[in-house]
Image (cartoon, rainbow, N blue to C red; front, side):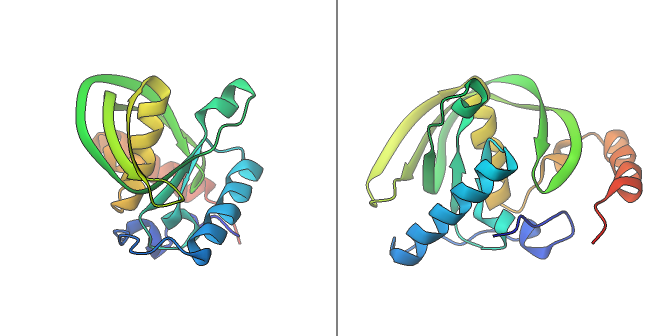
Length: 165
C-alpha cells in the first residue's frame, strides 16, 4: 500500500461515511497500520492511501516506544477547548514541518473496528494528531492552516523539494 503525495486528488476530497464494517474495511485497516508503522507516522487517514472512506488510525504512543493502535471510523469532534501550537509534519508532504495552531483538548466520538461507538477525551499530542487526521477526511492539509506568507514559502520549498517519481 502506497501513501499518496501532495497533488494526488484524494487528498483534496471529502471522505465518505462507512456504512458497513466488513472484511474489506478490516483488511484496509490492517494494510494501513502496516503502512503507517513502516513510514514511522503517528497517524494515517484513508485518503492518504487513496481511499475516500471516513477512517483513520493513530498511534501517538509509539513516540514513547510502546505501540498502541487506535482506529477511528466515522469520527466526530463533539467539543473542542483551548489552543496549542505544535510542529507538524505529514506523510503525504515528506520533509516539510511547520508550527500549526490547534485545539488543546477534544471530546470525540467514533466507531471501533467492531462497529461499537465510543467517546474519548483527548489532550496534547493525542488531540493534535486527531485533528490532523480528521482534517484529511475533510480534504484539508496542515499546510492549509499556514498564514498566506508561510504558505507562499511552502510552495517555493515544495517546488524545489518535492519527491521525484
